[in-house]
Image 1 (cartoon, rainbow, N blue to C red):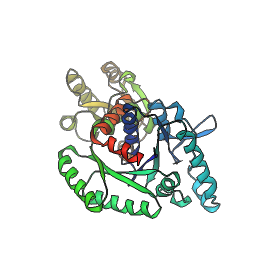
Image 2 (cartoon, helix red, strand yellow):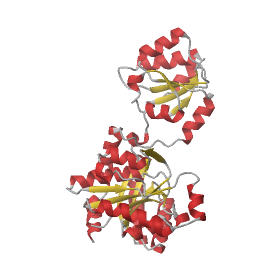
Image 3 (cartoon, rainbow, N blue to C red):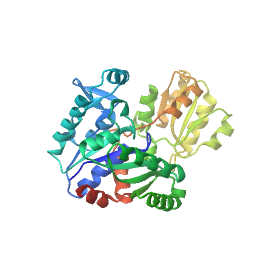
Image 4 (tube, one colour):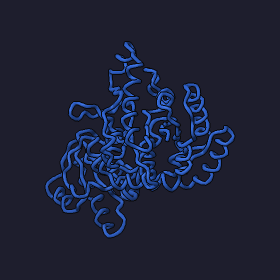
Length: 363
């Protein structure tokens, strides 16, 4: 069976989520699955070996000890310049093929995840098209939800892959808003058919996959947990900056809001706390609270927060700086995030034609 190369038309379109789902779906059909990510920039070093962060998520989250191999070609900040100036493409390619062969000997199918977008790695002659051709893998393109731009992106990437000698199996559209799902699915399926590209599936935007936990928010902001350690698994929906007077601010709080307010604004804090406690028996409009400016509330207010069970984070930055940081953050699935991993498996199994993928890999 040929390997499957999961490639994104752009960054953050859901490649890792798709890989998690495909691993689960392949296993349900009795296949043993190996996984590798040939190139990576977001690295973690364990016992002197480099592992790409997404690789750790999948290897640990999907219990794939047999796929626990070091990065074939690590490309951390600064490394690309060195490789470009002193390029040894044969050596780099050999490291990738050696890793692949180690996995293919032990598994029915090897799932390969690309780095970034379709051309990422071309600077060292290891774009997705180059590596797919090198491994004899069939390519599955993943694209973000839309109609015109989605079809255009897939067409552009398909042309690039073909030019590099890679074989495109088909494309799947991901993160489609539920209210637009039927319309987008019908249009993109027809658009891909017009281009002679097979549609493998259309997946809706899944809130569980999009919403991070308070623990993930805390880690990325390097914040200090003041209280609510037991509820750090609360999922965050929208982020709200409490800039209005309390009586106006509470009307804007929606289900699972993450509220940012200066730590010395006791009026806002108490209003948020009241909303949290009043709705405790039903839906909670507040998932967590970020206290900005490095200000810790006065003793009585802090005691009330601790008693409420609401997760509260203290950050040094001002309110708008913290909000801007959150806006720029991308929250990847964590290895221990069982809920999101389970959601990824269900999403792929329900909305992607997994059987068609398997048959295609046998051809």
